Image (cartoon, rainbow, N blue to C red; front, side, top):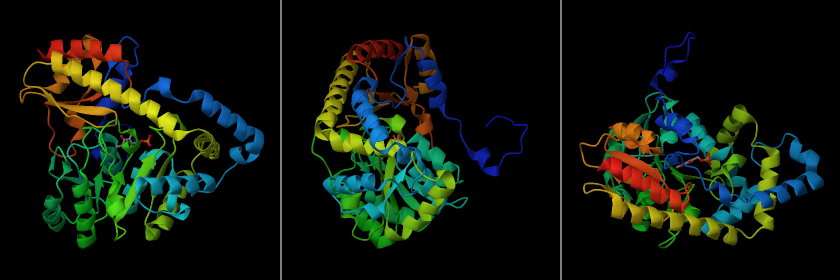
Length: 392
Ligand SMILES: Cc1ncc(COP(=O)(O)O)c(C=O)c1O
């Protein structure tokens, strides 16, 4: 953090500035081909449908939509989510569901609920940058769990639990940000079993599960959670639009009330208007058709990115093969410095995110993340050509 004339709290000293925020400023220029941000495809936002839903809300329930409302969330939306959760593979009632201001707020609330300074959080390595930031705010210590292409390795957990007594494990089982990798079904079952045996709390963050474009759907870790150790978080950011800022958590009964108090203290409630609009959108439109459109577009963009990387990239670079989501993860030769590559890339008007910021502990400098949801096929091809020329 930069020097300040103000006497800030001690926790501010531990916060790392985000490279992504800086990069996003550059990539806002239209001539830059950006694989950097984690933005959904804006042309797939259901603008007309959301407009129709907004009109209906204002016509039929305008005053209620503009009034303060319950901290728990809009009841009909919570009921819709309870049904959705059943389709994803576990049971929850509307009473277990807390609507949040994006799933990002859920991460912040879990940090507040669990973490004292110095407490340990287990994470995948690398993991979601803004989760690192959220937990760092509470002065967490991060301990990475060994991972391979099937996600984190559950057998490594008992020893890590014994050594570090973690407050919780944070995991993104579907098309992880930043790697695009997915935790296999046997590992999900093993994870839930280990959590039950060792009293480990799991925070399962699932923003991308509905964006599978190939392979077979796998139920959430929560599906195997017979001991009630898993907190499940998801969002409408990738399936409707992130500007609505509506996420949700399914909380074990004993955590619901404490989390609700934190939510009240934080923002009273998530936008009454946005929740009602989302609910009308979800109940009046065919979600299968809407999601299919997104999946088809992202699948096609991934295929183009992968194919162009295969023809253009020099030897020594490998990348993950996600079955859904919005990202893939490139590993360069050991001597690669992705920050330095980025500086040269920006001159050529192409951008990505260097891997460094995604590592909670030991940083790797030869990795970078590519987002493919936010560029058209033509721009993906051209962007990879420019990037590959720099890598050669
Ligand atoms: C893994 C992960 N969790 C949480 C979020 C936050 O999403 P939102 O707050 O928009 O629901 C993101 C956003 O990109 C993400 O990648």
